[in-house]
Amino acid sequence: MELDIPVIGILRGVEGDFFGEVMQISFAAGLMAMEITMNTPGAEEIVAAYRPAVPQGKLLGMGTIRNLEEAKRGVAAGAMFLVTPNLDLRVIEYAKTEGIPIVAGALTPTEVYGAWSAGADLIKVFPCGAMGGPQYIKDLLGPFEPLRLVAVGGVSLANLPEYFAAGAAAVGVSTSLFGTKALREKDLAQIGQNVKNFIEHCPSTKDRV
Image (cartoon, rainbow, N blue to C red):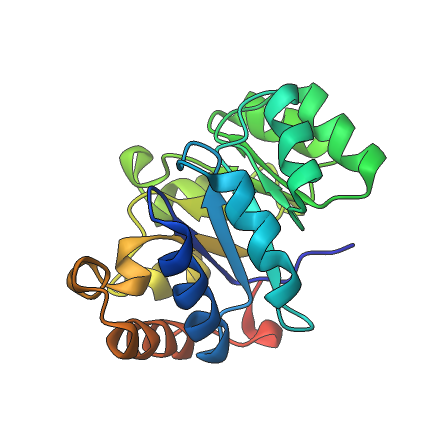
């Protein structure tokens, strides 16, 4: 399964009911994929509860999958894709065996190539902002042109066009997508508007590298 999800919305440390509300309004606003991190209290229960409510064509995944045990727990909970912050070849192998798309974490050229060689669907470059942001994506794609990189860490509405211009296949975003104030105040209408605005600033599929 090829993941064509230009933006992955990431939520960490939120309660289940609120996650469900944010998920629904974000999907309605045009977001294709939502990720809840494994280190969120009750994350597995949240995925299990809201997986049936995911609209056709949308994806609910689990992130911060650091090892094989967490990968198995994520799949058992019903995650539709997995995201790792680090490179663990066993996790990639497991995901491929289970037929679950995986966004594998990597940072150095060696890790990026290792994730690609192991069969990761997308490669999460994290923390991208700390390494130079869009320029780092561009630099990595010099020798690794066919790779589909996801920039995570430091992505905002202001630099979003730069990431896609640099060749990123997708971005992973949290508060810059939903809005820090809107999340804090649980302003669902504003969260929906923020997501819609963010998605509208993404290039269309045909325009992306």
